[in-house]
Image 1 (cartoon, rainbow, N blue to C red):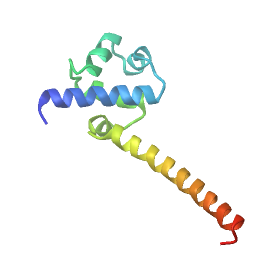
Image 2: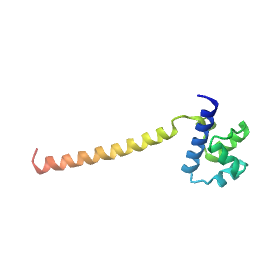
Image 3: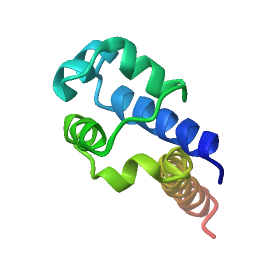
Image 4: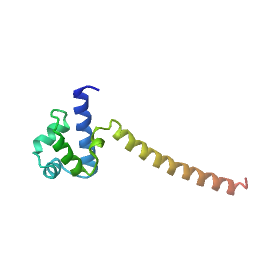
Length: 106
């Protein structure tokens, strides 16, 4: 993973965590003590913050710093959602089969 790839991943992850917390860029900027413009530039992969700012961003997002660099955050969240729906679908199919078995004395 090259330098730009890391910047892009960081930006996507910050945006993901910010949206998940229901924060605007202005909210996050205030929590981290940086400008809205800097938050925007980080999220777009145009700037890379210093360690101190990374720490402040992570604290504002209520995550650990290392989580800002994970490559599969969205994938992990999507997988959790699919697992939940899969469980719901399985439960509905089982209930439907039980109703059929009962109706036809199977």
